[in-house]
Image 1 (cartoon, rainbow, N blue to C red):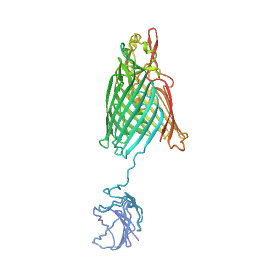
Image 2: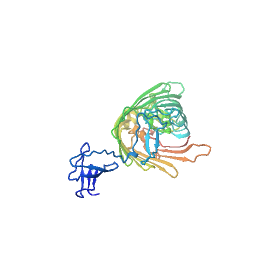
Image 3: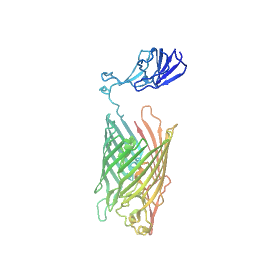
Length: 544
C-alpha cells in the first residue's frame, strides 16, 4: 500500500505516499502526532504497542492543515491470564474459585475469584489434626533436655487426641528402669495451632524407686528412703509479634519429694528475628525448645524427661542448667546451613557418672546417689560456669543423607593436676575444677530407600580428662552424645489387621567405652569418672 509511518507503535499506511520510507513517530502525552510531506487522501493506521494486540483502521481522511482524531482501545495480550476482579456489587457464587468460559471470538478460560467480603460456608469444617497412638518399648528419650535423667529402656503408652481443629490433648504413661526405676503419667494441652501462635501447658507426675535407697546421715537409724515423687509443670507460648519477629516464652517448675522438698524454677525466653529469607538472629535465655518444632515421638520423650537427682551432704538435689546464648543462622544454598552462637552456662549440682566402690571413699559420704542396676553412682560435683562459642555446619544430599559438623569451646570439669593429692585423701570434689576445653563432633544420618532403614552415626571428641560435656545445651539440641553413638531404625512390614507404623530400634551409646578418667586412692582401687557410660538398648514402637 505504499509508504508506512510508525506512530508510537502505530503504523500509518498510505496508498498515495511520496516515498516508500517508514517513519516512526512518538506521540505526546495525549497521543497526538504530526507527519510531514503527506499528500492529502485516504490513509490506514496500524497502532501497535508492547504486550497489546495491534489494531488496523482503514479509511482515515487526511487534509492539509487539518487534524484527524481517532480513538483506539488496545486489548492486553495477557488478559486471559490475569485475575478478573469483580465489582463490589457482585454477589456470592457459593464457591471461592470458578472457571468461566466465554462464547465470544475471544473465548478463553478466565480464572475469577470471589470478593473478600463473602463468607465461607459455615457447614464446612476446617481440617484438624488426626488422632495418634503409640505403644512401644523405647530406648530412652531423644536427650532433647540437656540434663535430663536417662530413662533407660522403658514401656511407653501415648495417645494424642484433637479437641478441635485448633487444639489437642496428649496423654502419656511410661515405666522405665535404669538404676532408678520410675513410672510417669503426663498430660499436655496445646491450642492456637492453626493461628501459628501455639500455647502448651503440661503437667507430669513421676514416681521413682531407688534400689539401694537414698543414703541417710550417720546416726540416723531409719531405713533408707526407697522411693521419691517428682512433679514437672511447664507452660510455653509462641507469639509472632511481626512478620519478622517471633517470641517464645514460658516457665518450668520441677519439684522433688525425697525426704526433703526440692524445687527449681527455670524461665524460658527466646526471640528470633528474620533479617532476610536466609538469615535469622536469635537471643535466648533458658534451655527450652519451641513447642511447634517437635514430632510426636519427640514430645513423648520431652514429657518423659526428669532432671538428674543427686545428693549433697545427704540432701537430695536436682541438677540445673541456666543457659543464655546469642546466635545467627544462615542458609548458604545447596541444602547447607551455618549456625554461629556465643553462650553462657551456669550449672548447679553438676552430676558426674562414676564407677567403682564409692562406699569406702572418705569425703564423698552423702554426695553421691547409688545406681545399682547401672553399676555406678551419680556424683555431685558442685557448681561451675562456662562461657564459650559454638559453630555448626549442616549439609543435606538429596532426600536421604544429612551431615553435620560442630565445634564447641567452653569450660568442662576435669581433675585438677595440682589437687590430685586431695583426691588421694578423699576430697574428690576439691579435685575437680572447671577448665577451658574444646569438642569436635560429626553426625551422619542416612536413609536406605529400598529397605527404609535409617542409620544415625555420631561421634563427639572430648579431650581426655574431661568428665562433663563442654556445651550440654548444644549437644542436646543437635542430638549429639559424647564419643561414638549409633542408632538404627527399621520399619517393619505392616500387619493386615493392624493398620499401624511398626518400627524396631537399636541404640548404642559410647560404643567403644571411652572417656573413663581414673581417680587414684591410697591403698584402694581407683575410681573412674566419665561424662558418658557404655550401653546398648533395643526396642520397638507401634504408632497408629
